[in-house]
Length: 216
Image (cartoon, rainbow, N blue to C red; front, side, top):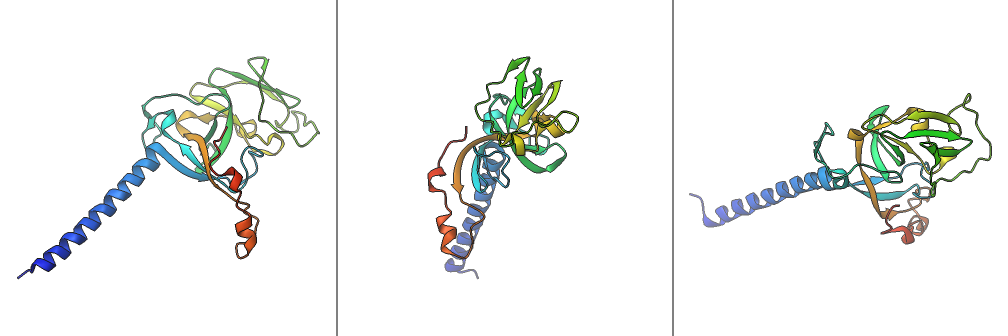
């Protein structure tokens, strides 16, 4: 015979299991459709984004997308120039990259001696940083001289803010809109990853001034 205490215990276990399942489903829903966390592993977006920055990326801003396929179920907006976006790297979709949108479908992109031209006009480049005074000819690589090339339909062209040290669309081409995961939104954590994990330096490495900064 099952006692009332046993029934209460089973009921409590069932409620706990249900709560855990609901929490997992809710977390998966939020991660898939609303917001997702990413961290910055390289310096390609310096100084805008530092190595060790941890970001929340808004996935909803560009519409509700079907998991795995990237097809848009509910369109809201498309990435626009100067948005910082996270996307699947075209050469290896298992990797996520973060870059700044420079041009969108239909735009013609050209780079002349580090200067970006969009549709023949200078791009208002408020975020690009150049640390190497040397100019690479197009025959060497497309870092400083490229194009003109037209951005195909349903694609975007992206570059890192650290223009002389960014492996981006100049080298591997365009990003498919289906591969865009979302727009960088806010820095929720940041620290200097080079500091020693087992010393007070690790605590001192926290970049308190960056916490809560919106990404632009």
